[in-house]
Length: 240
Image (tube, rainbow, N blue to C red; front, side):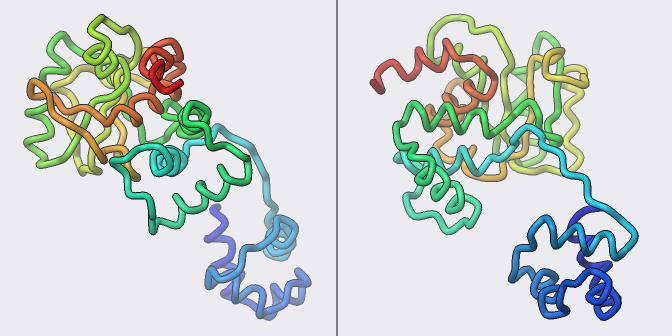
């Protein structure tokens, strides 16, 4: 059960849950309205009052807005004054963490982006023409897209780069990737990772030889996320 479902369940019997949990009805209402952030101890008391309990588990960060915030700070193609609250929250975190160096920002953003851990990622073992099929695939869906990872690094560096390639794309329903290759379960078995763009991943993308590529700063962040540190260092050698 998700936290919002827990709160909704408590809202169905506020007097009883307030009495059993020791949490006032006004607090329960504010939490339910989203105007107050409950503490973990408050949530546990509410859960116990419902005959439930809360289990807390840490997992790998998979937050695209960390990358968006990093790009806001160092990438001229991204607006400097974002209105997105998630991006603003990450800007405040980076300030609190005293991170303002571009190289550190892209490294941190890559780690926090957690590409290979995202639940909405599709992992594909490409057939020989897989990359070449991308323009037609996304044209059929009238969907914006851009390459990143190994494929994009290969073009910029002028030499074959081994590793996962990435396709960021606008969210699309019923995206059939069978023309590209075979869907596999994990990134280690894949050549290509397809991900819906939810923040600034497609901002500043460009086209070359019928293929679309992400902006250079997004590419560097993605390379860090893929642990392709040598390639990221090569592309940022002029930043020092």
